[in-house]
Image (cartoon, rainbow, N blue to C red):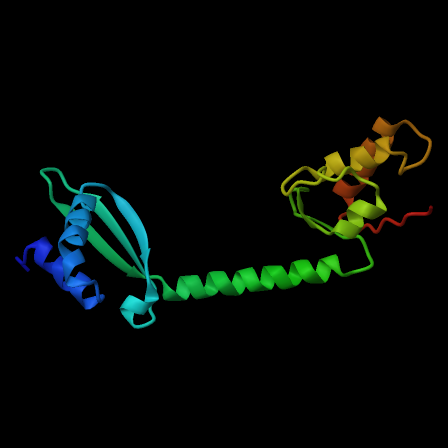
Length: 173
């Protein structure tokens, strides 16, 4: 407490192995940075393998608040979720069946390319969060539900999905 910030920054830069002739410029740059609010993820190598998030907020009158949060576990969980998501995506993409996942609000959450291919949907048609009704109406317009009026066929199929989410639809082509 009470140590000038420039002394702290000089100490840190030397500890990080910065050549002596570069310390003054690095300190000036760093002190200048203190005038802006900022969030940065600090390298784990500087903190014994821990990942630290530093937030800097300026105070009225020129002071600042620095907070340091250990986010190592959060980053580990993010990596784990990303790995599982990639594994799920690879599994879905390697299935023979076309799959579309619809949430409780009847929004499309996930699909595989086989589903798009089987139904001859436009390449960029599917979007995460789009209403499943949009997919059903597109299929109806493409003749998926027979020779009936596509709008009525689409409405009927959407209504049946609303009444019973356990329905299984089978193509006969």
